[in-house]
Each structure stands twice: as C-alpha cells, then as structure tokens.
Length: 430
Ligand SMILES: *Cc1c(COP(=O)(O)O)cnc(C)c1O
Figure (spheres, rainbow, N blue to C red):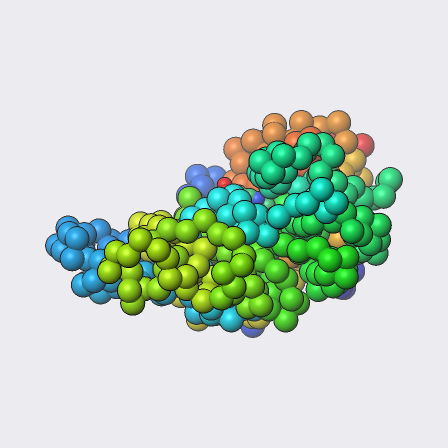
C-alpha cells in the first residue's frame, strides 16, 4: 500500500487532509502550541499519553460542581450519581473491546488490574506454573508476572519464559508464538502478551494465540494498553480469558485515568474463581445493607473493589463520547491511511540514512505506531531536537528506537509530512 503513495510536497499533504473521508476532530482537542514555522506541535506521542479533549474540562467541572453543591448526596443525586458512575462507561468500553457489557468494567489502573486478574487466573501448580510473555514486554508487565510467580512461591527466572524474535528479526511470528506455546504444553499456566507491542508496534494474532494457549490448557490474557482505541478488537469471539488496558493512551482519558478490565463470560458468576473482594464486588441492590459477606455480582464487576474514582473517570467519559460518535471502524480506516502515508514519507528519508522501520509493513499486523530504529544515534537527543527545532513530539525508547504514532482523532497527513521533513533535517545521511 505504501508504495502507492508518493513522498510528496506540503501542498499535497494538505490536499490529502482536505480530501480525507473522515474529517479530523483536531479542533476539539487542546493541540500543543508551537512557536515556530507552525502554530501547533505535530504530536506523535498519543500512544503514550493522548491529548486532552476540550470537552474533558466541562465533564470534570460538572463533578466538581456536584461535589461542591451536594457533598455526600452526590453519590445518589446530581447529574450522574457517583455510585453508578462506571456504568456511564460500560457501553463504549464493551464496543471498543468487542465484548458483552457484563464482561467489562472500568476500575483502578492497568498494572493493578493485571495483578487482580492474575490473583484469579494465575493459579500455578508444581507441574503447571510457567508464564509466557514477550521478551520486549513493557517493564511493568514483566515486573508484574515475576512478582506473581514469586508470590506463589516460584522462582521468577524459572517460571517466566520470555519469547524473543528470530535472530535478525524485530518482531515475533505467530507461528513461533504458537510453537512456543505448544512446546511449553502442560507446564504453561498463563500467556500474557501485548495486543500491540509497545516497543515494535506489532499487532499479534490474538485469536490464533488464544486457540493455541487453550489447546495447551493455559489461560490466555492480553494487555491492550497499545491496542485499546487503536485497532478493532473482538475479545469475546476470540475467546480471550481476560484482558486489561489503560484509558490514557489512544483513549485520551488523561494522565492516571481509570483503567479497564475484561473477563470472558465463561468465567463470570463462578464463585470457584478466587477473587479479592471489596464492597463494589457485591450486588449493588443490597450493597448498602452492609452485610458481612459478599453477594458477588455475576459480571466483571465482581473484580471491582472500591467506589469509582470519579475525577479519574470524568475525562474518560468525555473521550469515550467522541469514540462512540466517530466509531472505531472509521478511526481504524483513517489510521491505516495515516500510517501508510507516514511510512511512505519516511521511505526516501530512510533510503540514505542509517535508520529503519521495525514495525511490520502489513497494515493488519500493526496499529497507528511506527517504530524507527537508528544505528549509533542518541535517540533521546534526537527527539529533543525534533521537538525544539521542528515542533514534532515523539518519544524515544531505549536503546535505539523512536516511536511515531499518527492518531486518527487528531493527527493529520500534514503532521506526517512534517515528521519526515524533521527527520531528514536532523538525521545525517550515512
Ligand atoms: C502503558 C503501559 C503500562 C502502564 O501501566 P500503568 O499501570 O497504567 O502505569 C503497562 N503495560 C503496558 C503494556 C503499557 O503499554
């Protein structure tokens, strides 16, 4: 696809923006100001922290006003009573995940949710206690699985298998993941993989990996931090056991936003699955009878413990409305156009420089992000120069990669053109 798109002029990039079937919603975000050749930053870090929807302030202010006006009565009164606040998010969460509404809940933060799910679904035995992750898993996931193994009395170095790409390759092949799962067989307790890898931007074949994991008798879990709001998902139909994600990357819910979790229907309403309970795990109709034992909800809410963090959820509500309005399928289609365009702009730059895209070229094997790897170049210094000299914000990931994510809600073809121009200016030809 990328070959069809010529590396072209600024005027052409602007034409592409004007002609795209899905108009940008850029004006509805706080774009960062830039005092240079352009008035706005070209923002490529929405895979790390999405920009602020202008509507977030109003939704948040509503809750501050209700708190000021109602105090404790805000739990049951006001525009959106707080005891049910997470219900405002359920429908869109379910759509984004390809889940049934009872399979999802917004709660806590991502790493906390990984741990809560492992309390329930990592129940190792002497024979079956191995956890399979990617070798370049996000550090928090790596620390989480290692500490879970240790918590259950196993040596993390023995319990956790890290799957690396073949020599000379940057990303994992589905056939190799499936083979590793089969080879681990009866020893495999849990597969935990990023739906999209944070470092390479590779989208894994979740359905195939889930089938392989189940054939080995293991639980299959997906960390959707970089997939949520980025690619279309069908967690229920793919038969994934559980998943967790954050709402502040592509989902623009704000720093530290309340996160989400998915538990497949077949694990719901099953008291045999152990959980850590709190008063939000219990049946809401009897919650305030203050009984000493839990009446577990027959939904993913059984895993929720605390009353919802309203101030960390209100911006998520503002953002989710935009996703519900625009539709993930439309965003994904535009995302493919933007990412292919960025790729095409980078090709002539890369032709004469010691740099390469390590993200898969197949649009089905990636989302919005392109990871670019450099030889003998300080990537932190490079991103600082891209920002200072060109108003292009992207991030560096050690040791040698920068990540560029054109986000279909607010990024433009013109932003992509700017990024390629900036790299051409800052990376010396070999
Ligand atoms: C962003 C990210 C996290 C962050 O975890 P928090 O608990 O939200 O701080 C964890 N795992 C992955 C794969 C991520 O991409």
